[in-house]
Length: 142
Image 1 (tube, rainbow, N blue to C red):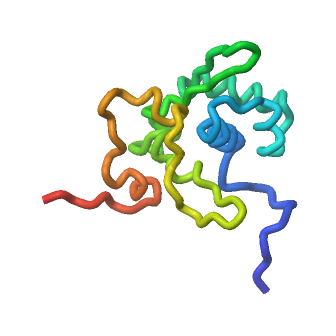
Image 2 (image 1 turned 30 degrees about the horizontal axis):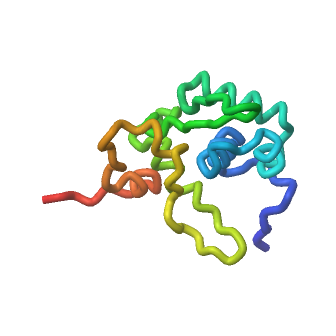
């Protein structure tokens, strides 16, 4: 008999770092408290993850009054050698479009400053980048 995934599963497909980065990409002005609530983490854990992402060059922030405004460094490559090729922008294009209240999976990727602000001027996502993340070959242009 096939077992359905349950709340006590010992592993997940995404890391907490990816979850936090997706929340910031969706809303660059999001509060740590709101990230924590959405990701089911403590505020302290979210703060540590944000520090990790900043130290790794994947995220920056500026103070705006009493709040932080984040920018994702979208052109950064993914960290693991097995993920070489696609960038953070490619990953976010797949993950940042979470279905909510009847939306379909795979809508348009977010176009916030969090995913575009740090890409070089004129930079575009390489053709087939999402396919590369999915393990497919990019289409050839002959």
